[in-house]
Image (cartoon, rainbow over all chains, first blue to last red; front, side, top):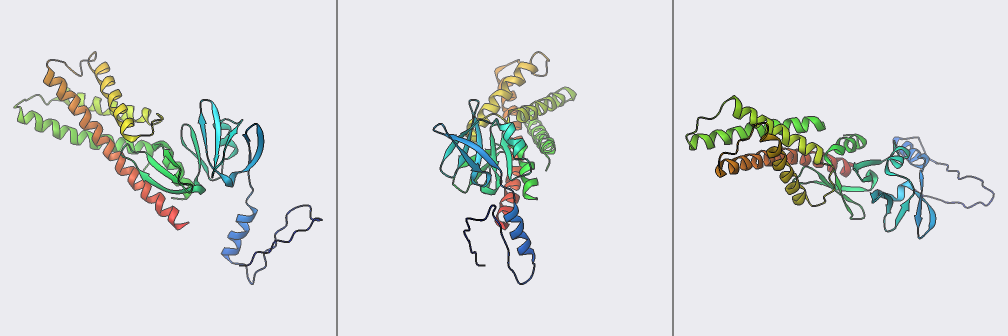
Amino acid sequence: MRIIIIEDPLMEDIEVKILCKERTIYVDHLATAISKSQITISGKIENEYTRIFSDDIYYFEAVDNKTYIYCEKEVYQSDMKLYELEIKLLGTTFTRINKSCIMNIAKLEKVKGQINGRLLATLSNREKLIINRSYVQEIKRILGI
Amino acid sequence: MKRINQYFCSGCVAFTVTIIIVIIIHVINHQVTLGVKSEASLLFLILLIQSVLYFMENIHVKSPITHMAFELFIIISVTFFIGIPMKVIEIISLPAITETILIIAVAYAIACLSLYKDSKNDAKDINNKLKEK
């Protein structure tokens, strides 16, 4: 598959055309992935607000009444509470994994069962998070298990 | 397995294994104390352990060993705190207290092992699904 990006200053919005011999499942998947709406979350770093795409977020964590947004390397602070984020991100790959954490399942690399019945999640940036027993069913549901 | 089923299943396993251990201990000590009261006490104990496990799972402790030690401490404290006034647990001698603590620890360990087995199965399912993607 070749990807050609054409820059045109006259274009008002981004337009994507898929040129193919025939419409297959792969083409449909491609179209779905492209058309998937991106949710943006406002994050603060050193008193400067930035728009963060949900795809770039690994997880959210609430510590001492403050909410933090963890990306691959950067950590931002959010003005939103975890429950507000949970509502905003409903139907996406984000899910609550313990009382103080919302994880992006798309960034999940592997999980490991722990002796106390919890799961230890390893994200693609090597960070480790605890998944409580009560949230395992929801993760399985999102993954289609 | 659904969350409530996990606790119910681990409770059943813990009850069965613990009652077998109690029978063995009593047979060795030539005690004929197994009856409605002792079995009801054990059932009370198992229900208490399951309740503590259920309510304590949201405690934010990263180390599993610390988490388990804390859970066990709470279970022993709550069992004695509720069990003594209700006369489910009787403190007659030091060996009796030791035996009660031992039974609590064994029942807790079995319940945890059952939950661990479930978590390993869940982890396997999730990892398989992640590999597919």
